[in-house]
Length: 298
Image 1 (tube, one colour):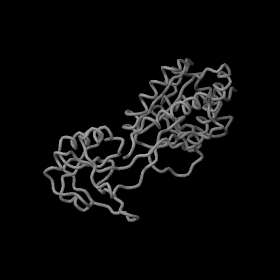
Image 2: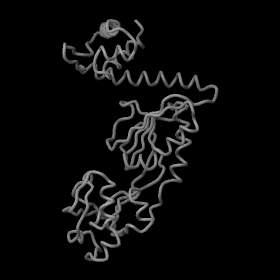
Image 3: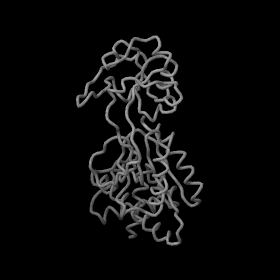
């Protein structure tokens, strides 16, 4: 039995959702894929998939073996890339994830420029506000905002951001004074739903929370910032999300003395000793460009 091929077939079956789809994806017959799975299960001495005529589901052993198989196949592909890169050319597939708004503003343009300079590189860019484990999802790199739990990953800080409270000059010209977080109770607030209804502030070493009764709640950052620019009320977003509007005067920061601590913006990747040439090349190319491209906080 070709163990590596059997492992790859098993991953394909799970990813494609059926034996027939996996066969189509790999150019094999269904019978060949069935035999490969059966041989692998006999070799391991466990059932990896519970199968019926209508559906199949991973067993507990199958889920554990799937995660391990993904890592092994990724390591094998990385070693192939290392050997192939002996001519100095980086090539292969990069899998990158970043938060949606940050990715659209800063990561996507950077990826486009990188692809222009490296003709043999391909990229899968997954923009999502969900934090997923890199190894489990076979991701090479992740942009993360905020403090991270301890892990075996390398975290390279490329900048900082913070939550800022802001409003348009037109709104502030007619609204009540806002000199403390408690004053928000007298204002129309625009809530980005993912943040929840409590806005947290810091004064000295003390943290305080203000419960917001929003006039507008939305699930998209640009919707919230647009409503704020158009004078509907006060919003609270990450600085980079409204940096352009603050720079040109369409928005004004308020409650600056109460802003919470800075949050690090970090590029996350496996330990440097495990980096493939393509990942190393992107890290060294992208980090200084991101550092220069991020807006300053003051």
